[in-house]
Length: 96
Image (cartoon, rainbow, N blue to C red; front, side, top):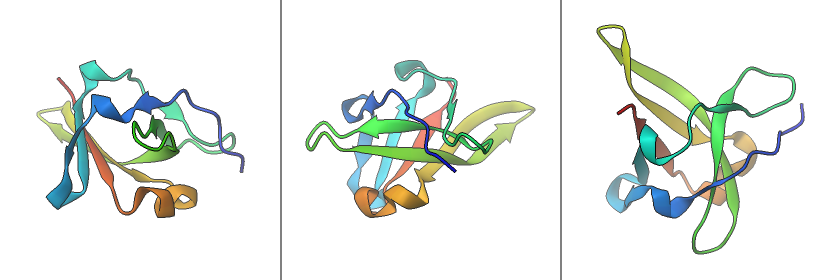
């Protein structure tokens, strides 16, 4: 399983909530749709480049939330290979 190269989104497009270790953004502020992460799997997600360190972390969609048939938001977690880099940070993207 090989990790695909994704064009990373700058971390400053997200609002960081430190007490929840959560990065939040609206879908319109980042470029959706999500992309495939691995060459031999259907997992989708995105990559984020830290504005401070320049380090890139890839996140995978862990859950999609719906209301009345429409997607309200997605939660993403770091891929296993990048969990140490992300230090338990999660992402929530609102479908605006």
